[in-house]
Length: 209
Image 1: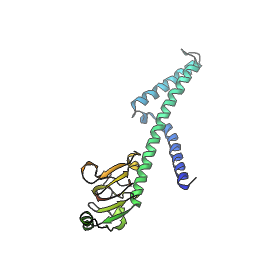
Image 2: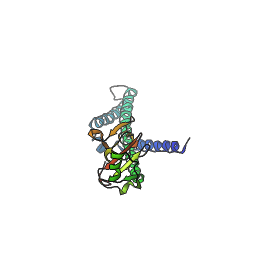
Image 3: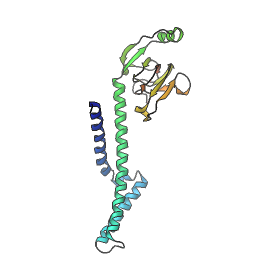
Image 4: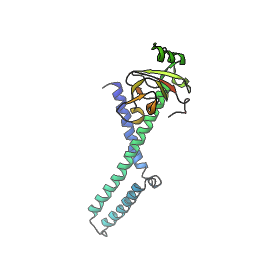
């Protein structure tokens, strides 16, 4: 097992362990009332427990085992719903944190406007300067090549390429982005899968997606 696989397994275990704890914490009526459907199920679960206790005392209208089984399934439904919600929240927070960290740690290949014009007119090889993604400002230009992670949100000014946006959208299928039209917007933290793109930064650090 590789180090990366071990980290991923540990990461998932932490999310599930936290979700199990939160599935019980979320039983608090003040939390459950935010989800009216599950709140009604929880109220029904409490009432069913009361009927089960009544049946144990010999005053029930149905066998205690039958009522207890219903109560068990109702509580399982509530806890599983809370668990699923907690897992989704945990993954979302972890993904957002990972994306923020990637943006902070990602180097950017900054280019000048004159170089871009030469590339578009003459097809000359473009030179770039490696800078921190946090130093990029609105309207700065940078180039990304195959395998690069986009350091900032922006608009494509030149090129067409396939982009992996799963880190942001969760969609595993790559999308095609190109200059012009409604497919020119790109998001920092995504990965370039083919060709190259020259991108104009659309917002200062902390003001983008």
